[in-house]
Length: 111
Length: 115
Image 1 (tube, rainbow over the protein chains, first blue to last red):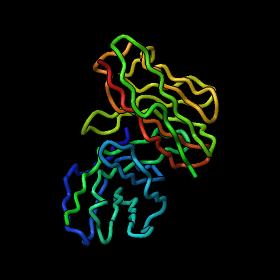
Image 2 (cartoon, one colour):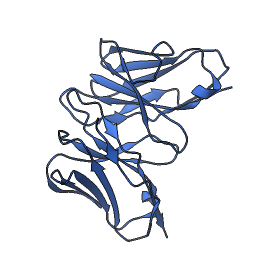
Image 3 (tube, rainbow over the protein chains, first blue to last red):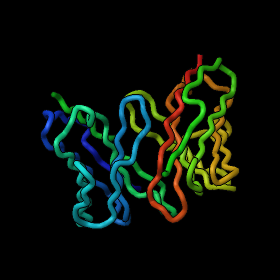
């Protein structure tokens, strides 16, 4: 059974700092990894996907994947109060895989 | 692209009635749709997976006769909560995925309150 572990937080960072969100997983077969952002009372929104080892950058967001260590992270540079949300890590939904979500990490960016 | 809509966005109903929630993929063909439930401050809970034209696959502990899922077309899936009770009050969210793609995209959710 696939498991996705995230620290529930809250992770509190000052505005302008780098927020680092981490996720570990147990399934060595998974090939696709996703980060979703969920604001309170809203549904999740896909912000990053990563499939290969290394870094993938998109604006202020950088996803990092290390399959050997079964570890994926999300860095948010120049954090803004509007980044305050719960960030969900997920393993792939392709093929016959059922998507597996972590419980999410709550991020608070304070002015 | 990759827009998923849900209707209604919120619904209040009396105990014992049935409620139907629609999930539509607006700009892509959703070969697979997922239905989730989320209680306040809890994580997403996958209820069932449906593939177009096939019966839904329900997760353990989810009653298929209570939560009826229909995925009759590549752009529409429906979830019907039958004989709703107050404990069914929750945030119901669908997501959709197209064959050949790994990403799934979420609808905005439906907040159900059963009185």
